Image (cartoon, rainbow over all chains, first blue to last red; front, side):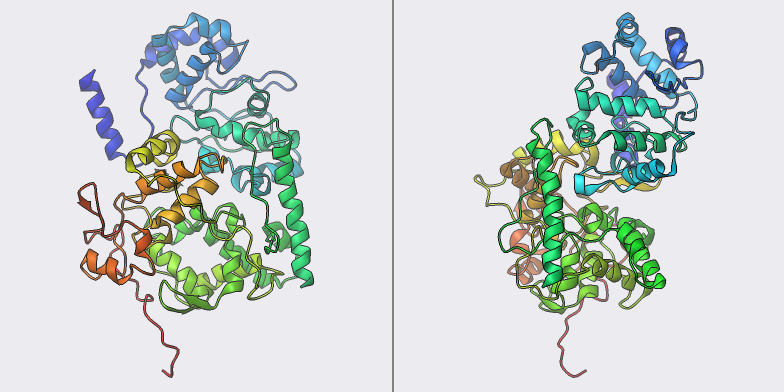
Length: 212
Length: 332
């Protein structure tokens, strides 16, 4: 274990650009685990936008440590997902790591759900994502989720190219308390200041942005 | 005076919005913007949308937009004027419009004025030059240059409607100072706060985060951070900045003591040399002690280490920008 840790911490010290700690896992084993996931998350990890229903998020290309944490948090209940619960209950820690690494290595797919978005929503969504609305203390998404909202490290997942329905569901989940697993509640604090128009607009806009 | 009252009205609306949020009592992170005190000048600066709707000359609009763009993404001047990972908007949050977050419009209405820091009268451009020289560890765009004029124009646009040299104190100017700490600020306590609340973004090494060549989180110490002459290297300034603005989106959630402690922790780490360095840190401290360094730990020994005792200028290939010089305002 020590031998594994040393190159890791060295890489962290050297890489001023990577604060994220790489998650250990076996992508090949993860592919086997993923057979339980593909019914919803699809073989390419692209998930599915479901209008007027619960969307299945794209997992492909998301950060492995982020994915792993979500699986653990769903199992632990700090992120409530009745749909996911039976599946995460089947996975042990090793399998969660493996499947997280597997999905993180798939090429990112495009987000759906924003195709019919109106100009007004898109303009408002872009403003929230890139400039924010400081009068209401809604800081811009990209201040944490990074340039192009393409994700930063293990704590701030990619939003660009995620399905509109899924992003909106999550923002509502923070507001209604069913998702309570964000570090320092950095997201919760913002989500609870957003109204339905904000949620719709920013989800639509983000879903249309390039994932990579 | 009429415009001032109008601004007050709209400000009251804005502030009211914020406190409505808090009053609802349902949210877990209410926005508790302090209320303006009686007699304070409250100004809600115009937005970039307001600019587009205004009747200003199209060419002026273009220049103000350019100033805004420089302000939000100052990294476009990297290697020319900026030699660290800071943007103007790193410290001046919310497009430089937000009270308690170093709003920049006051500079447009209180300057020219005497500044103790450099012991002469400064105008807006020279004030901006100070930010470039210290906070950006660089050198300013030339006075009167396109970039400098654009930045100054953005400041002035934000001050639209405010009288020059207002006599009333300005609500939310700078980072309003916290009461003195109950306990002497402490590195160990500060480190605890930092690791718990700050390191997730700024890193345990203080280096912040750069991703794909773009600054995501600014460096709070080290070579890519502000230098020893920056205003925010003063403990009271950083403590107030942190209390009023951090963690992002959760202003006011740290106690005053936590803010003082974490500020002390951050501002007793190493950073690039003060551009006014004489070659001797103690001498430099002594020279600027009364007007500046009495509030920093520069030139002091903390945990057995004399801070600022080095010739490291960070990424910058020079020590002192040429514009940092005295003025006399006598016949030239």
